[in-house]
Image (tube, rainbow, N blue to C red; front, side, top):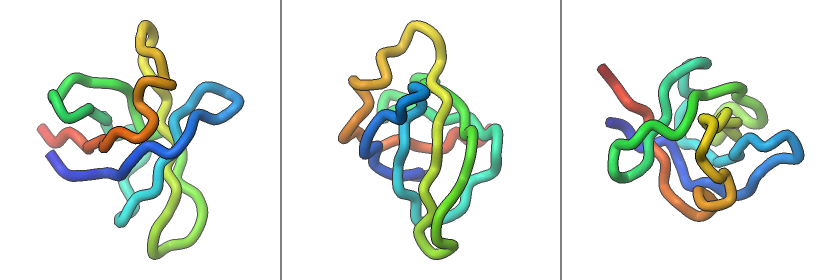
Length: 76
């Protein structure tokens, strides 16, 4: 498990936006601190040094509850 970043807000399309220290691969699984899957990396944008990451949230999860939480990349 690798730290992805802290969720800052929810986009108008329902994706969670966060700031990351490294560029994650598109489609990578994202989990919360309890290692529960919350979604997948949808897009990476912004500056190379600290890119923004858009995470498509799984159905049944309220994206607003993830704001201000640390999210992680799940590695198999």
